[in-house]
Length: 165
Image (cartoon, rainbow, N blue to C red; front, side, top):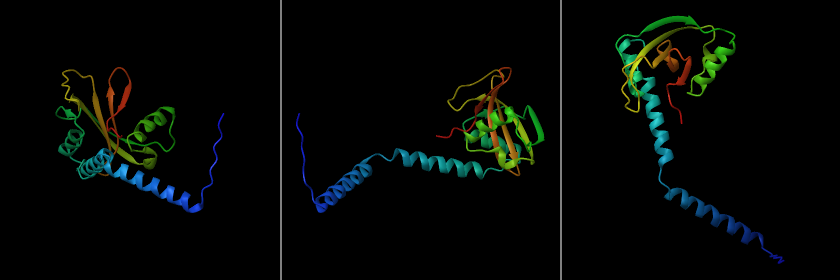
């Protein structure tokens, strides 16, 4: 067994730490900017989505199109409902899905919202659909999308519509 010991002055320790910081900064500056690129695109998409007028039919379709979804004609259903002031377990689960996308319905408790559900004909990956497998829903409050989901009718399954990474 070997035991090493060394005596370093505070000047040597500070010099070593500075050298480590410079080396770390050099490594970070030489790395490809993939993370920054994704953040910039995410911000650009967010700005694009928030500038779309979702009061109109064309605006809601444009919103879905910006996310990569193609939808068929008119909505298959529209609704006007109030977000409950107290969430039950189903609403808590749905709001958990919404929070995963950057939305939060708790901010809109007691408010009247409008829901628009469309038949999805094409997914963001380019998959064309000919059946009623997926429905996309946008929940709108005062020209702002406050919730969105992709559901599978008959299976009672809900998925995020907006992918947040």
